[in-house]
Image 1 (tube, one colour):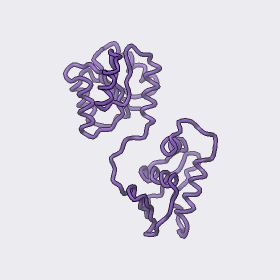
Image 2: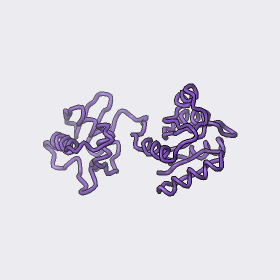
Image 3: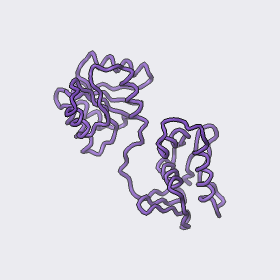
Image 4: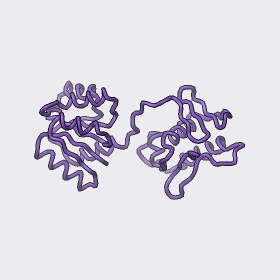
Length: 224
């Protein structure tokens, strides 16, 4: 992951940054709220860690500014105060998770990994169009070359996830997390079964397969 950490305590920042880098992540460290907000608005981060108390601009203001700018990057807020009201303030400001100091590095790492696995919050158009397939999220309809295709709810959700990522290989694990909300492998062929049904409906009467299987990797919607 690419992680931005906004932390003015030098010892905490150095300790956490080193641990995250040793775990294989890329970390950028900002020492105050204004510099952190400036860095965050550049985009490209998978997760942002923000201390509640910061010089220049406090952590709550940083998070509020990000959310006001429609930046949905997951935020983990750190605080030395563990009161319920304090946590509520942080969550209502737009933070996704809260961790009270002092904390175990293993817990911080686990929480960051969990945040990064969450499907991103999207502000998206109601209409997705990839290749010759058009999906309307509001009307819950799917058309291929003008032909209406009836899908079951889970088939529709599966197709929508593939169409949101038209140039990306979607692994079985990704689809389990995003379509079925599973954070574990159910040891069934649930993904393969639904993909088979979805393919049959999308491909009926068409020569070209709408969904490609990338052997050993996953699946991809055909974009042209």
